[in-house]
Image (cartoon, rainbow, N blue to C red):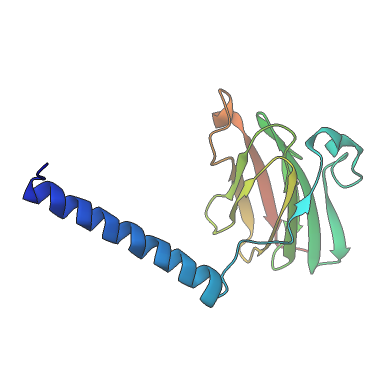
Length: 160
């Protein structure tokens, strides 16, 4: 059986690319030590309503004017709470989970973005220096009502 020279070239090229990609992944995984997060918090999606943090989603002041915890639940097709308020310059630590499907979390106009996966608690820390209203949207398609899944973050000039 003979193989056309162009087919042979593409087969060799493909094999070299597979070896190169696997080598790169192996290098960064084992030599450079880059790994996926291993300390992710697990939560039973069916018991989110029984967890004290997520049974009543809210903004919680930890250190006045400096640190706020936000407990959010993303579910088809809304975020809870729908409106958040924090002072300018404070660190905001978002704890987000989902009881149903994977959702996205993106604060429009910022670099705050994450996936919200059922069974896990997504944690993001951000600081908002510019006062104003920021739209929070789901940027991961989650079903027919996906386009309605949003919330509002209000960054105030004063402390609270």
